[in-house]
Amino acid sequence: MNKTSCNIIKDILPLYVDEVVSDETRNMVSEHIKQCEGCRRKYEEVKADISLPIENNTKPLKNFKSAWKRKKALIICSTIVATIAIMCCVMLAVNHFAYKEEIAVNGAVYTQKGENLNTLPDGCVELGYLRGISHKSTENPTEDFSATNLDEKYAGCPIYQSADNEQIIYLEDYSGFYIPFELSEYIVTPEQE
Image (tube, rainbow, N blue to C red; front, side):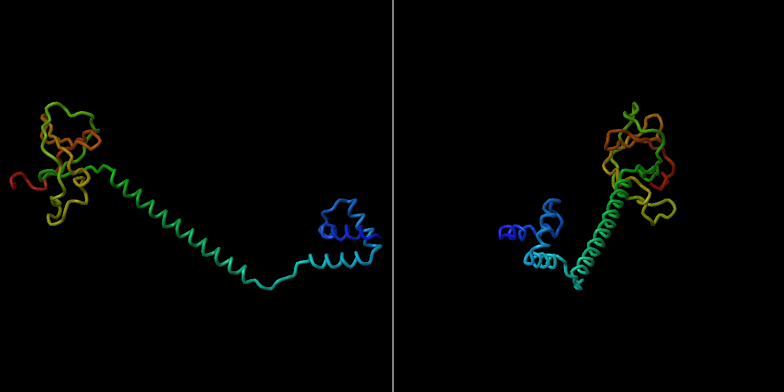
């Protein structure tokens, strides 16, 4: 074989070993290797160079595995913390916006009765504004009544008394509607005032 042919074959050998040449080129290289001792040795060298040595060093894989486990644990913990935080926020929001059924005004407990109104009934008189919690429970006067009250949520909201029935009051919500409440019990009897 001529030198040009050998040089071309040596250039094509890596592709031939990787089996990415056409059938025609593969046949040409195979025929040439059978006849040319130098190209056959070069073919054996290229073939030996391409085989990957087996490494026993597994440290990089172990490092990757432990880093992946740490990252996975961090993601799981972050997800749990975020879920708990979201649940707490939802519970606080629900608690804040939930309408409870009792308020205390001037030593009396009023319970919500009926539907909310868009306008006050005629003849209602403004009693003032709902202040913070300062009354006591009926069961145990030494305990603060705040646990079952709306006063804190509605602090600053105006209160109106019905002209027709003194036992009915209306609390004007910040949204502009009126919540009817009916007298249910006295914390302090009218004689004690």
